[in-house]
Structure formats: structure tokens, C-alpha cells
Amino acid sequence: MRIIVYGVGAIGGVVAAALALAGREVVGIARGGMLDAIRKDGLSLRSSRGTEQAQFDCVASPAEIDFRPDDIIMLTMKGQDTGAALHALRNAGVREQAIFCCQNGVANERQALRLFPNVHGVTVMMPATYLDPGRVAIFVEPKFGMFDIGRFPGGMDDADRAFAEALEAANVAAFPMEDVMASKYGKLIMNLGNIVQAAVGVDVDGSSISKRARAEGEAALKGAGIPFLDVGADDPRRDEFMRSVKLEGETYVGGSTTQSLTRGSGSVETDYLNGEISLIGRLNGIPTPVNDRLTTLSAELLGGGKGAGSMTLEELTAYVDA
Image (tube, rainbow, N blue to C red; front, side, top):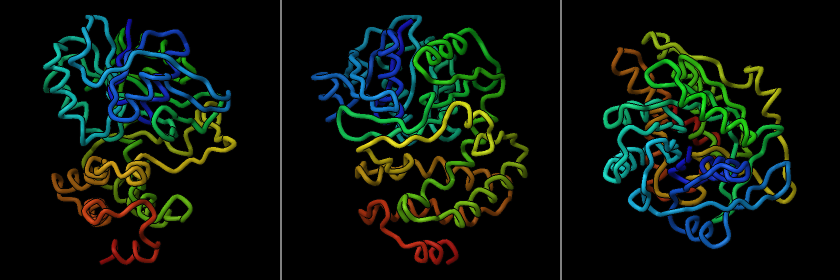
């Protein structure tokens, strides 16, 4: 079984490196400086274990891969890039292979199922950072993170168990489950604060607004009859597998949205996080004003070329309440 990691950034980088270090055959798909760095020297993984250098094949496009029937394909790009990635996979000859959506949000699986029959959801709990090309870091121990895994739209099969086994050997706690989307909707609620952190910066306490967005999100899910699990701070697995750790000389710059703005990537995934709550609200006649404003905010930050931490908490509060 070979594992294709499509999108070697923070999450994809940590998982690809960890799998390769555990002896798994890995092929990464990356771009730009990250691709060049991996091809030249491999990928450096910084963790509480120290610094480890992982070597694995890396390409720029699925078209460069001769896909095998038993390949497992991990999607680790942001939700806004999923559509193009799925079509690239189909054009490269992917048909029946297991596709694992290791991404935030809940829209990726549905997009994948439109094109492929063998789709799986993965709830990713992994505070990873893409430091610079060729270097990633993970800021928890003893495991590198936790993944809930299951078939989409429901159930569990041998591919889920095989993927979980590979992850466990790579120091990632993995939990195959029958209803992975309940876990993913729970993670969606957590991620509603991502744009808040990105707007005011990781050192500013924006929890007052994040809590409002999450309460509104929970109300929308309940009103729409969508089940969700609490995979946040109250999840007892976190104390066992994901204790925060500081790495000397390294700084955790924040969540995925903060990292995107910091790197100037040109896009963020807010449309598939807070925007998902807005969509659910509009489909079911449930007001979601806080998440509506935060979704619009992400577009305005990008359109204005503003980076992470470009707003004060007072400015953000006034914007949300406008």
C-alpha cells in the first residue's frame, strides 16, 4: 500500500514525513519552494522528538504518478482548492482508489463523491506549522495529532482500518468510526474561530467573538438536524494524545487561516468554515449574522492585501456588530 499525500504543506508535510520515517512508501504532491526543497534535501520534521529528515518522492502534479489500484490518496489542500485537485486526479487516471479528505470543513467529501466512489472523511486534529520550504513542525506530544476516520457518507471499511494502522505506526492516533461526519461537523464548530485569530493575531484573545460564532454554528446545526461531536478541549483524548509542547527556537504562528494570511497565499478556507454555517442557515431559515460577517471579512482581508493581525479586537467587534 502506497500513500499519496496531495498537498504537502503543514498537515500534509507532517503526515508525509511521519509516514516516510515509519518506513511507509510515500509520494508527495507539492508546489513551489516546498517541492524544490523536498526534491533536494527531503522534508525536515521538528517535534518533541527533535529534528528528523524524511526522504520521499515528490512531484508537482498527479499526472506524474503511475497510480496503483491499492494506493491511498490523502487530500490535504485547503477546501477552496479541492475541486481542481479532484479533476487533476481523475485526469491522471484515478478511478477506484480510496480518497481520504484530510481537510477542514464538510464540503470536500461531497465534491469527491461526485467524481469517485471510494471516499472517506478524516477529522484532522494536528496543530502543525509550515515553517518555510522544506521544514514543518508539530506542537503536541506524545502523538503528532489525532485523526477520526470513516467512509463517506457513513460506515467503515478495510481501507479505513489500513490507513489507521499506517497512521498509528507513524505516531498519529487514529480512530476509525462509523459516523465520521459527526466528528467533522464538531471540528467545523471549532474552526469557526480561525478567521477571528487570523484577523486580530495569535497573541490577542478574540474568544468573545469566536464563542459567538460557535454558539451560532451549534444552533444552526441543531436547527438543521445535523449531529455533531465535541472534539474540542473537552475531548478526553486530547489529554492522552495531544498535550501542547513548546519547541525551542520555533513559534506556533496559529491555525490554518492565520498561516495562509501570514504566507500571503492569496486565499483562505473561511468560505468552507463560517460560510458553511451561513449556507446551512440559509437553507433552513436560521439566522447566522456573526458567521455571515466573518465570511465577508475574509474576502475583505484578502481583497485589501491585509495580513494576519491587521485588525484590533475593537475594530473586529465593531465590524461583526455592524
